[in-house]
Each structure stands twice: as structure tokens, then as C-alpha cells.
Length: 198
Image (cartoon, rainbow, N blue to C red; front, top):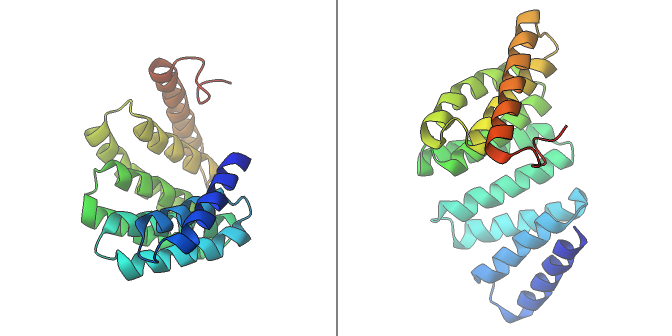
């Protein structure tokens, strides 16, 4: 919101002239600013510059590289540049699997982001297949009631529903999935949680 944007600009202005280009704090303030900008056209050059800095000075540390590419992919998706966002999110997911392993929490988050990009690019069958592969990984590593596992399951239900060529069986499966996810969310988070209301 507005406070995060103000903090992003303040951090950027504070560290712009006082810290060398190689300062991690300066780079983090760029990321905060880029994620705070509500207009993706303004955020894109900031996030692109941050990625360039990370690749120049911290390319041996994959965590900030993955984070920077992920932020950039989100911005590209917000701009409606779905093919570029999809390519970037595929790269983020592949790098996450290679460096962190398929069952790491961050890799599962990358998988969720990739599945959204697949849907945005109208690749519903790819999204469904990918999410079906991710579900047992999330269950094994995080547990069936973990919020990320529930998101993987929920996203699979949405992909089944949104597919233009969905069959009656797809819709029945989606309904079963959505009911199960809603029930688990109520059990885990309680009835007052934002994701369990309505």
C-alpha cells in the first residue's frame, strides 16, 4: 500500500548516494521499491535494474537471483506480458529445483507461480498436469494441511474449472477438490480466516 511505497522510496533515496553499488542493503531497497510500486510500468525498470545488479555482484548466490527473477516475472504478468512471465517463471522453477530441490518450500512457491503463468498463457492442460505432479511433492514435504499444499490443490481445482475444454468429470473433480480444500482450510485456519470466509 501507500506506506510500503513511501518506505520503498525512502529506503531507495537513503541508500542511493550513501552506499556503493555492491551494497546488499541498496539492492534490497531497490527490490522493496519495485514491489511497492502499484503501477507495473514504473516497477519494471526498477526490478530490471535490481536484477542486473544481482547478476553482476551476487550471481554465485542463487537466492537473490531467484527472488529478483520472480519479482520481475510478477511484474511482467501484471503488464499482461504473459509469454515473457511464463518463460521467466519456468527459469525460476528450474533454478529452484536445481539449487534447493523439488520439495523445498520456495520451490513449491515457484511451482504455484508457474502454474498461474501457464493458465494466463491459456495452457490449461500443461497447468493441470504440472499441478498434479506438484501435489504429491507438497504433501510429502509439507503435509496435506500446509497452506502451500492447500494452494496447490486449490489451483488444480481452478485449472480444471477454467479450462475451455473441461468435461463433466473435470467439473466434478474440481468441485470435490474445492470442497475438500475449503473444509481443510476451516479446520486448519479457523472460520474467521480470510481464506475460509464466504
